[in-house]
Length: 258
Ligand SMILES: Nc1ncnc2c1ncn2[C@@H]1O[C@H](COP(=O)(O)OP(=O)(O)OP(=O)(O)O)[C@@H](O)[C@H]1O
Image 1 (cartoon, rainbow, N blue to C red):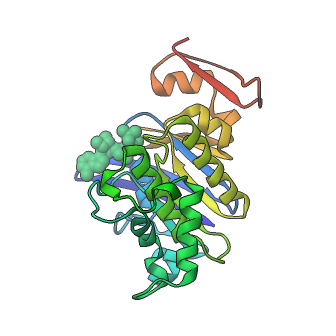
Image 2: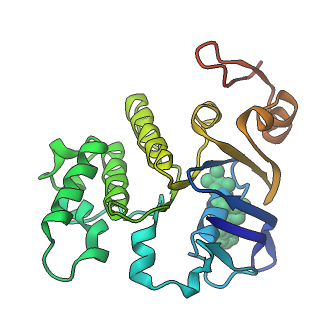
């Protein structure tokens, strides 16, 4: 589905990523974790083909990104990032409609209007549809952009791919879980998600696989139970922790400071 071999990335003479191999399969939710500055957002941008010419090509559905038609690629792949403009003089539903731009020229079709409505309901912003985007709180704005990404991928294409860079920032606990369930449902339909998260317990609960980065290199890449060990996590984060089985679902439960 998505394959990249030996990714390295440097800014001037500063190495940000080195020797990263990634393979993500249909239906997989890969969560990238690691301390500040580990290279998580850079890796996501490289994988999403946002960084220009990389050292090695990224293969998506057996083709390099440069071999994709742009509109077709927009129906197959989307990215949610933190660098959204804080100031957009549009209503909420118009911002979500931006996700449908790859589907129409001047006037949205009924399918576009329906996709926007469905995405707003999924992210719980439908009650805000007519509000000025600029008047929203940080968490509400974040959910509007998530709705835009969901609207972009609302189509009949099989095996789509979404990248999400810290999608839970600013969200309360209810909306964090709602978004993670939405992403999980998306992958359970045969799609793929690659997501950067800081919350290791949410990663342990929702990820199929976890990639732990430190200083631009992979420390571990495996199922959550293999990556989240006391030795690895306390060493990588340079902070003590205890890991036990979550009494509710048996996933690893990480307790820091112990
Ligand atoms: N344009 C740039 N110029 C110089 N350094 C950069 C640039 N972009 C990223 N870096 C550096 O590369 C390293 C990795 O950054 P990146 O944003 O990928 O880390 P991250 O793991 O996502 O961090 P965080 O958890 O803090 O969001 C950091 O040390 C950062 O300062």
